[in-house]
Length: 108
Image (cartoon, rainbow, N blue to C red; front, side, top):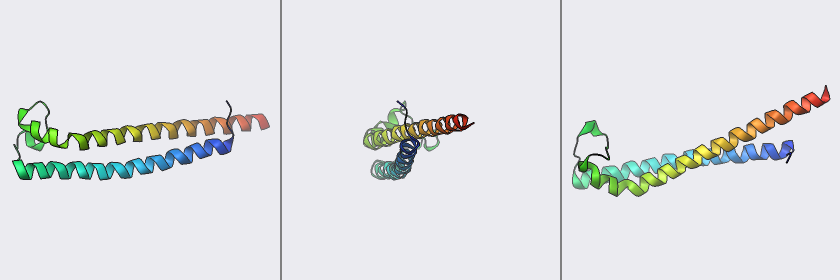
């Protein structure tokens, strides 16, 4: 199905808005995740191994991982949405370039 230039531009605009919304949401979700992590460490102490990096393989971090898992999953979902929005934007931009190139070739 061929799309008009207006439809392709609308797709680009919609994807751009989605990208901005996802990026803002990711900042918020990351802050919430970090706050939950700090809260857990205040209440239960920080094992302090691995230079402060969480390691799912270490049993010392099992509690904090369970505590922050919902926040981390929400962050990962939003990250996937951002990836998809960027893909939609890229495909729509490529479609516009193809449309304009074909339009220019038809006028020659």
